[in-house]
Length: 393
Image (cartoon, rainbow, N blue to C red):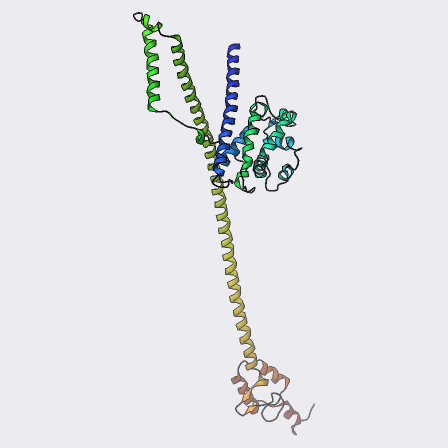
C-alpha cells in the first residue's frame, strides 16, 4: 500500500509538472502568433489569436488558485482578479480602481478579463505581472503548492509577456468577451503538428515486429543462443523509443478526450440557452397576441361609441329642426309672415288654445284648428263675456 501511494504521488507530481510546462509552452506560442498577426492588422476582440492568448493567461493565473472560505467552512471558487486586485494595488497609476468601479462589469471573472484587455492597451501587462509576483506573501496566500506563479515558470511568464508591448491593441469593454459565465477554453490545435510519415510508420511496425519475434524466439529452447547475443543497449533503446511513442499517443488521446468534453459542455450550455430563448420567444408572442386582442376589442368599442354619437347627433338635429318648423309662432301663410300672438279675425289666443297648439305635431292640424276656431263650433271667451243676452254671474 505504501508503494502504491508513493507511486500515485509521483504520478500526480509528474502530471502537475507536465501541465505547468505545457501551459508555459503554449503561452509562448500564443505570444509569437500575436506578434506575427500584429504585423498585418490591428488586434481586437475578434482575433482568434488574442482570444486563445486570453484563455491561456487566464488558465495560468487560475492554476491551483485557492478558494475562499465562508463562515460555514465551505470553500467557494475564486477568480484570479481577487489576487491581481490585491497584489497590484501598489502599482503607480494602475487601472485597478477604474476596473473595480466599472458599471457594466459585475462578476469577478469578467473584471479579470477586462483587466487583461486594459493592461494590453496600456502596454503594462508584464509590469503588472512582475509587481504581483514580487509580492510573495500575497501570492503564497492565494495559491497552493505547485502553482505556476509560485514556480520558476513565473519568471519566464513575465519575460515573454514583455514582447506584447510592441503591439497596438484595440478592445471594446462592453462586448461578449467580458461575459464571466463562460469558462476559458484553450484551443491547442494551432500549436500541434503531426509529422508521421510512412517511413516512421514502417519503422515502428518493424520495431514492434522485431520485439515480438525476439520475444517468441527467446521463449523456445532451440534458439537460445542468438537472441541473448544481441547488445543490451539495443534492446533498451528500442523499448525506450516505443515507450516514448506510446506516451505521446496517450497524451494526444487525453488532450482529444478533454477537448471533446469541453465541446460537450459548451454544446449543453448552448442547448440550455436555446431552450430559454425559445421559451422567451413563446412568452413574447403570447403577450403580443393578448395585447392585439385587447386593442381590437378597444377599437370595436370605440367604433360602437362613435356610431352611437353620430346617431344621437342626427336625432338631436332632427328634433331641433322639427321644433323650429312646427312652432306655431313661426308659421307662415302664402302672403308672408304674420304675428303669432294674433289669430284670424284679430282676436287674441287664450292660454288653453296656446297649450293646444303647442301639443300639435303638424302644420295641417294647426290650420284645421284655425278653421275650427273661426267657425261656429268654437267661441271666444271674450265674445261670450260681452254678449248682450248674457250677464256675468
